[in-house]
Length: 371
Ligand code: GAL
Image 1 (cartoon, rainbow, N blue to C red):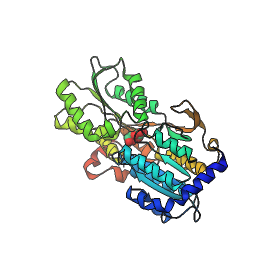
Image 2: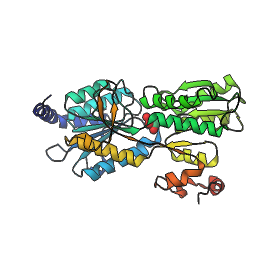
Image 3: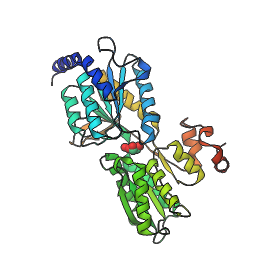
Image 4: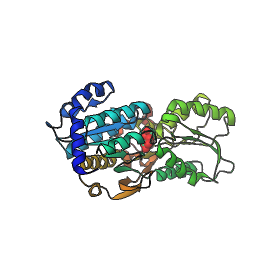
């Protein structure tokens, strides 16, 4: 499509924007608190940016990404208005949110897809309407314009290596349970591949589960099933793909009186997980620095909204599901255990020692040198 055609189709789409506001409100597309409302038309304000988050199950999206993305977008573009929405894990809701943003004629969309494949159709629709879509954290399918994320296989390798280390490297006959993420999230597939590349041949994988919508309750149920099937004394390690799944697994291990608790991995550096690591019930988490990811996502979506070339803000490239090479920013994940919480999460200002060290874990904090 020619640029002039794009502006024409976007202009006509903008004409329906006001009608769509009522609909978008009903769909949970709330205006960003910092800009005084997304109801302004494009004539009154700068570029309009849509931010679509996947769920409220995993803490990071609402507690870290949303706040950081809004701040960073505003820092780069004070005139930009931001419309954000959370699909609460529902594919149809996210499709509606995409359609609503397309109908409003926003200038760019930053998308964390609930389900990469199911969203491909609306990504194509956005592309046809001349609206670039930035795939944030998860590589959405369809004609996306740019991508920001971490090396997902490396996340899995860090988890796998840490688990082996915690289990004493090669324990003869050691058996683990794998609690993988949602396979409709392409990251979950990468995490699992990375972990298996390290674990295969070193440990026996007694049970392996996929966890739809990354629900901790499902991990809890599956872990109870694994304990009944394998026996309380026969689980020597747990590969949990993220901190929510770690929490669900640990509570099942506890409820079934598995003692001592086997080492459990995680990901996302959630505050509750960091506390569990200090207290000793979770072995590690993978910290994917939120700030640089949000900064790169904001830079990319603002450039896209302004119609600028994305290669200016992207130092890497990735291949999309259709084999096209697009600009990307790929960041490096960090393995966090009790001994480097201070040098990573505290140093980066993600949490203060005070936030981590509640009275119940004060003694463990002292031991870990968190004072
Ligand atoms: C992944 C993301 C992880 C984790 C998970 C569950 O795509 O990379 O950080 O949050 O989703 O939402």
